[in-house]
Image 1 (cartoon, helix red, strand yellow):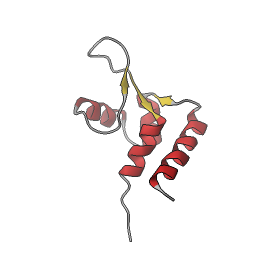
Image 2: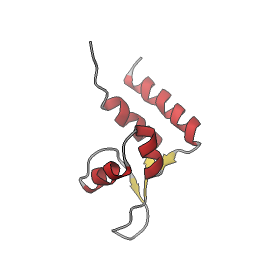
Image 3: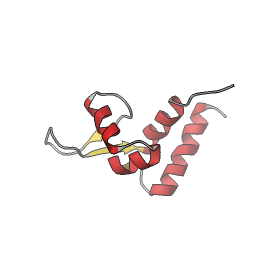
Image 4: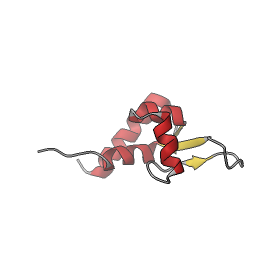
Length: 82
């Protein structure tokens, strides 16, 4: 299976579970088995999963993550073993 097909399949599974094209920080933490603090740190350091920032306040912690970007992040960071 190609990466594209895996991303498509994982995106479909995420949509089935959360019934949304975008996830909150809390939902993304649950989907990726990472902590909310890790996701916040990634945003501060401009690393990790791409996100859309909500609100005009620069200190706002409102972020939405696309299920496709989450799936792409999971597939991209997979460690292949023999």
